[in-house]
Image (cartoon, rainbow, N blue to C red; front, side, top):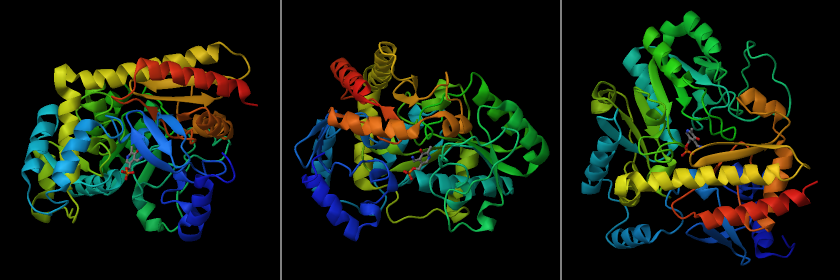
Length: 441
Ligand code: PMP
């Protein structure tokens, strides 16, 4: 990017008034060299920045845009509804309609509680699990992220390239300063995709565990699929010890099919939380579960309040998204799947046609990620920390920007398809990928 670009000037101004120049660390100089492109508009599968550059976007707002940018149906409904009022903080007809639609789509959902962000939904879910079981402990997995709630900020951040030791040796790395020992003392961290590791922990502490929380697909260390049967094992061991099985579908919900990982892997979780794709670009999240779980929230027994809960405009976007994606027998979800798989295959093709860099590609349906690594697979957090060359990935992603393709330069995140992506976009991206790979040192 040119030193005198409008983005460069904006970043200089931003650094004077915003911490690190941005509002969430991954958007700034941590990932973008020397500064992020300032995005002015999004249309379909494309972003354009303030300097007039255009990018084919595979980040899609960290997964929040299953229909792509400024989809005509969303623009129409939001323009219409904004002219009637932005937020009332009252009971709404659209709130009932969206909850009814969700209950019809999600097999384990008898009821829905709307929140704003994934973090908030997770926080409420942990409190519900503790209230319902009368137990304190939470089991979470290494490398899984469940928002920035104190109790789950252990081993979620990628660590500097190093070996974190044998998987049988527990590690507890706080992700933030400012956490009290008390906030973390009831959190147990276990390596993922490892049945024995979880069994050992549950055999020792299982009767004190309120819930075991897992992402359905590990999406905060790139994209790592669960081993066949692994999540069913997690569910079963929860049942054995009377702990709740909590599936965090913030990323995977309304992304890998109409009923997410619960459907994909034949799971019956006690609690599921959603966010991101649910709002089609608006902050809206949801906690769902069977009646016996959801009743914990009744009459404030488990407190979950919020001025912006069930945000009105977000609900209209959500309703439009759910109907668009499920029309013609879930054709929307099928499209996301097909394009995601095609893009992952296309990258594999590009990589196979050269021998300069060792790259592997991992994906599940709409979600895909690649790693510069000598390994044949990245299977968990410790693999990611030790074997994925994140600095090289960052350089490559920044160079892809110059070739008109936008992916997040953080290898720990992931890339995804939308309704707006086509086979032609897959081909264009593959060409850009090939050129950028050729230029990479
Ligand atoms: N859970 C998972 C699995 C996530 O990936 C994220 C965000 N990346 C969250 C929860 C938190 O969501 P939010 O950023 O909306 O607070």
